[in-house]
Image (cartoon, rainbow, N blue to C red; front, side):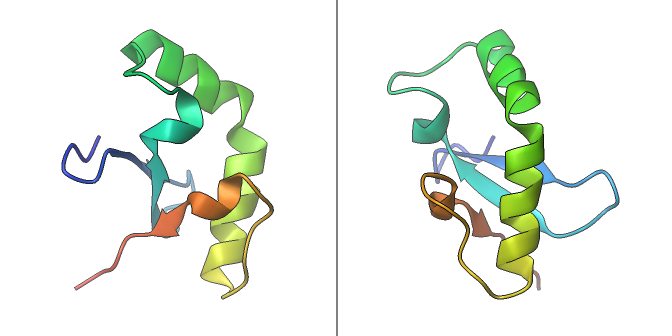
Length: 73
């Protein structure tokens, strides 16, 4: 969790790019860790597709279009 950005860091299992998933995608209020893990598991395929789409320079489908790639140094 990146508290300053209110986003969860997501890394694909193959070591691909790191993405930031806004907390508001998961819930309006601060969700519990368990609720976040369940939401991520339920949406894993869509999240992976969105991150790969971003990595190719395209825009994912709404509402996952609010995911951003973390800049690397």
